[in-house]
Image (cartoon, rainbow, N blue to C red; front, side, top):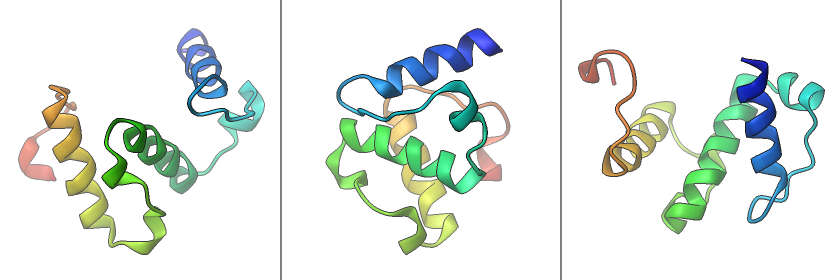
Length: 83
């Protein structure tokens, strides 16, 4: 798991994201901050996702993100009807 975390932090610190995380700061982020980072990554793929997730209902955020992830052929674990 630490290798995966290290890889994620390294990639977020590079272009186009230019974050300045280290393992400790990234690991200390709360769930909403992590969700915003995911949203920022998705916004690099599709600029329509460039927004502050606090400005929309959580259900809308989930549907929007899952729709884009589905277009990218990502299949999240769990039941699709849970979304």
